Figure 1 (cartoon, rainbow, N blue to C red):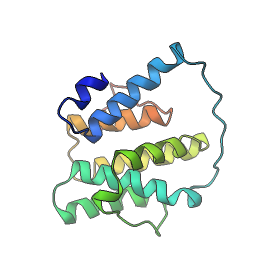
Figure 2 (spheres, rainbow, N blue to C red):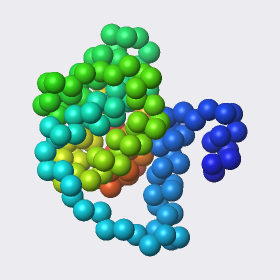
Figure 3 (cartoon, rainbow, N blue to C red):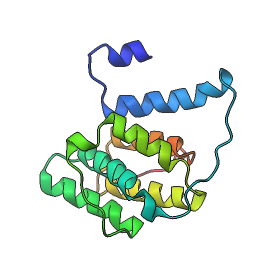
Length: 155
């Protein structure tokens, strides 16, 4: 899978998310699972990670600057964290998204739900959820250990 993803010498956000989801599902068969402990009970300390994730989703689903900002703001409204800022696209690449998801996965379950709802709002901000956006959202949900069932319509 790694070879196929890297064959075009670039890894897109969707490819990364899909790889992360497959790896997360298969890894327990090869590596002893580690007990995840809750490290965070408040979103205020996770603003940078939320900015990375929502910014990446806004860029992934929108093309115009105004639409990107609007999508980001829709997600921020769900989190009720007004001090969040849309990051430049260069600041929310795969390495940053990966680090953000690793840290966000250490939050309490109600916070994970809030984060996932914010991601869903960001993806659905324009009223249209493309198949790739829906799959990306499912991969993020899986990374947060909050899977979205495939039969749920995200539109």
